[in-house]
Length: 258
Ligand code: NAD
Ligand code: IMJ
Image (cartoon, rainbow, N blue to C red; front, side):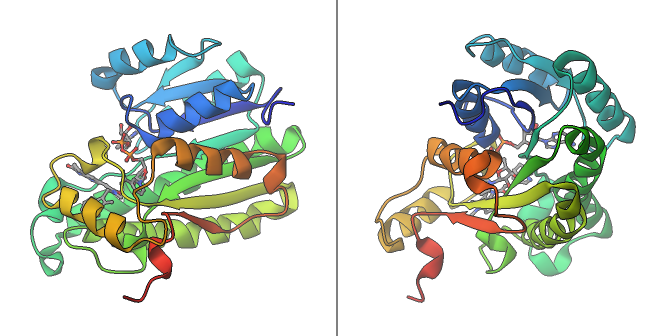
């Protein structure tokens, strides 16, 4: 039996073939899910259209900037019209202004803080609230977001993104508490570093990959497909008693003291 057969899902955060959200989209489609993929703006639309054409069933596509309330409302209307409703939501969106990831954290501007928290954390609350009525009508649902260990520990240059991920993980717990009685689960996957667009141009990223490879119990880095397999667990029936959790998918890196 396919893990997500008959289920309809919205996936936010596909930019290109390296996106963690794209790995989840491919895995979910292979498990029989019907999908709506969003793209941030027309600049990425062409990319996402080309990727979408490689899936077994063509997904519905919709433009959605998560900082625009009207885009989120329109997204849910499109999901209702084209899919008939939503059973799961994948949130794979993060952004901080580049200068905030380059200068010392203590110099973070009010505007960079606002943008990082709005795009990377508040967007989960807005999207979860928008899809919840549809999920509730269909008997429940599952929401999965993506986070990073920089929420708990200090990593060079992660800076205000670490603060945004701390807010995201706390939001996962508060959302799980609010939405649990409506049979909606909310979880996050904390992934080890993967070379995606969000890692491009981050100085020292190759060194970070090497440190993970050296110190993680499994002595290797992780792949996007491994994040996707963990997402299938949380999105599907196997994860039915798991909510409010941050699941570490990092080859064990986080357990080490030295
Ligand atoms: P990515 O660049 O492919 O994905 C980030 C996505 O965010 C892009 O699709 C981008 O279009 C989208 N986005 C940014 N601002 C947006 C906005 N205003 N509206 C709509 N979409 C917007 O990189 P990724 O690594 O796949 O990142 C996905 C998630 O995984 C992020 O939350 C990231 O923090 C998390 N994560 C990544 C890693 C890693 O090492 N790559 C590790 C742990 C967690
Ligand atoms: C990003 C920056 C610094 C260190 C980092 C990362 N490490 C990892 C990432 C160690 C793993 C990737 N990551 C987990 C992210 O969440 C990235 C978010 C991000 C990346 C960019 C780059 C381009 C830009 N703004 C960004 N905003 C958020 O302009």
